[in-house]
Picture (cartoon, rainbow, N blue to C red):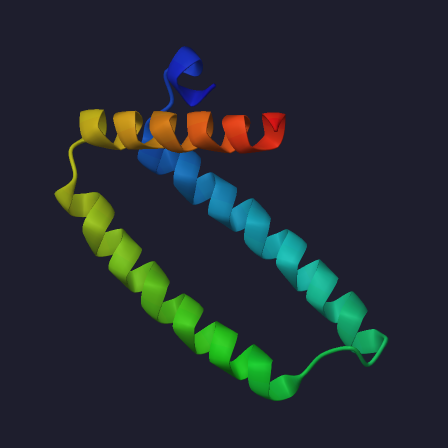
Length: 85
């Protein structure tokens, strides 16, 4: 969809991550209010998520926009096939 609209893949990924963060925070607060959150697991996931996001930023800066578009296209097709089955 981002290709059809002419949106830079980096912008599409970044805006998607911001929306995902807001949804995750809302869900996390809801689960915490129901006492369904394991604090140790949250700490592990937050630390590993921060490390992974830093690596992802460095990786996307090294990849050309064309390669990133091809990679995202492949990911979308694979996800579609998995959902189709």
